[in-house]
Amino acid sequence: MLRGKFILFEGLDRSGKSTQARKLAEALKERGSRVEQRHYPERSTQVGSAINSYLTKTKSLNDQAIHLLFSANRWELQQALVDLLDSGVTVVVDRYVYSGVAFSSAKGLDREWCWQSDFGLVRPDLTIFLDISPEEASSRGGYGEEIYEKVSFQSKVKAEFALIAAKEEIRSSEAGKASWVSLNAQTSLETLHAQILSHVDAVPDRLPGDYDFMQK
Ligand code: NYM
Ligand code: MG
View 1 (cartoon, rainbow, N blue to C red):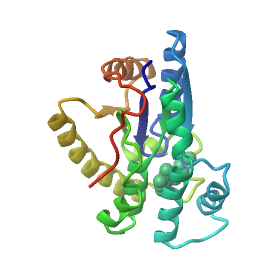
View 2: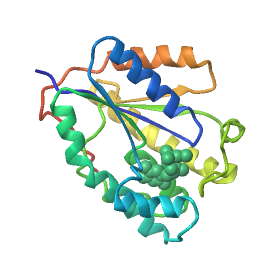
View 3: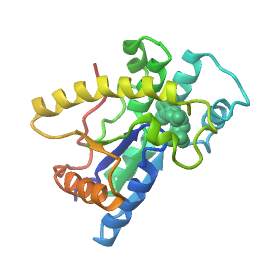
């Protein structure tokens, strides 16, 4: 039996991640795969509840502390994620370590420091970065409610994601398999969905227990 695939969506707020994650999960299920969706931050845990208070501006925390809470939230759910994958379920995830680094380093925290707390977590098999301009994102529904949803800040986040993408694309080509793809999110839902499906189909099969990990 094969393990499930770990497919990650990353991008700015309102880049369309949730919509595309749902469409991908539906398409894979229709083909008969077992699929689950996850989203970080997972706000239902105690750590997640503290994160939620920060994001909704009801509690202030220093930049280092909130960074470590986001990371702790991934760690507390890591075993459950691995168990799901090992049981053959494909997991479509909305945000993970790259958001952690991009958002915190956009505040000016040291980039290397930002990576540290996530080293050792399972690396996604494929990360799909939905590329959108901060201006286009800000025109989409519901924008501006949470702490990071300002065009000026999202522009800095986008620049940090660009640095991460460059690094991950080099890693992909060295490994001879695409583990990061950046797609233009300012296109039709269906065009984007078809592109995403074809990238997901190209992800190699792996056995349970066979993972790469986040590392230096
Ligand atoms: N965010 C998310 C971080 O700053 N660090 C992280 O590690 C993660 C996972 O939380 N603006 C930020 C990005 C978003 C905010 O996420 C809430 P979402 O996907 O909008 O619920
Ligand atoms: Mg958001």
